[in-house]
Each structure stands twice: as structure tokens, then as C-alpha cells.
Image 1: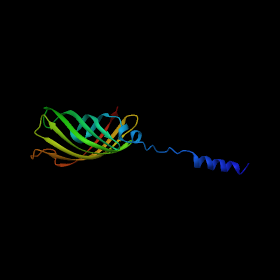
Image 2: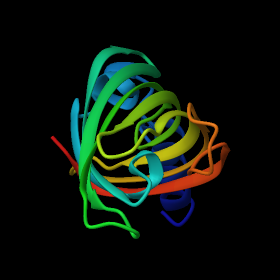
Image 3: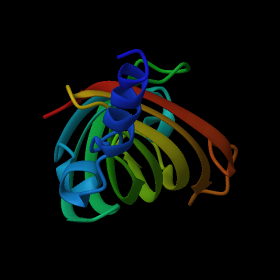
Image 4: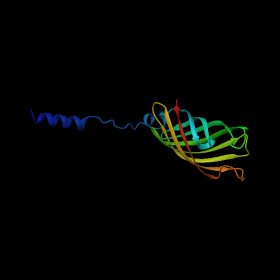
Length: 164
């Protein structure tokens, strides 16, 4: 009997199916990701802050393409003039099921300023199964105006939001 118990335990361990990682891409890859995200970005494309919405339009195995819109209102530091900033962007998500590499390109339009920003980014996105979203995105901002204005520099954005 004493030799039977270890033999039984060894048989259970060796012949039991192991399901530690799900390799089905419909469950473990990008195809199972929540398609809509709403988040607040500090710094980033909106320079100071912005509220953004993005939508995954194509999802295939471990890669997805998304479109983003966003904006904010901003009072300049030297004037009381109200400015609205509008953001459009597109990008790719690669990875999964919760951790993604996120390269993209965007454009920011300022209504109260001649600045027009083209933003090249390559960041990290965590998108949990319950919807929590966190983004950390280093970026390079190119300003179409060559005067003494913001842009033509390295920048960073940090986002927190919810995916649904």
C-alpha cells in the first residue's frame, strides 16, 4: 500500500491534461480584446491632457489596427484665449492577451494656435480582461510651424482608462 500512493500520485501528475496556457488565439490573442477604449491621457498627443476614444477596427490573431479620436480645451499660459485641440491617430497593437506593443502615428490640431503636430509613437498598453487600460507611450512630436512653439522633440504620454 505504501508503494501504491506515490505511484498513484505520479500517474496523476504525468497523465493529467495540463492547461496552464491557452494557445487558442481566439481566447489568448488580440481577437478576444475589448474593441472600445475610453481614457484620460496626461501629456501625450494633447500636450497637457486629453480625453480619447479608440476603436479596434481589425483584429487578427496577435495583431490589431485601431483608430483614435480625442481632444481637450486649453487656456494658454500667456493669454485667456480658449483653445480646443483635436486629435486623430491610427496604430497597431501587437501581443496579447493583456500586454501589447503599440506603435502609431497621429495628428493634433490646435484651434487657438498655428501649431499642427504630427506624432510618432511606440508604447506599451496593458488592457486587462475586466477593462482596466493603462498606456505608457514615448513619442516624437514634429511641429509644422518652425517658430518658437512646442514640438520637434521627444515627449511622453501616460493614459488610464476603461475598455468595453
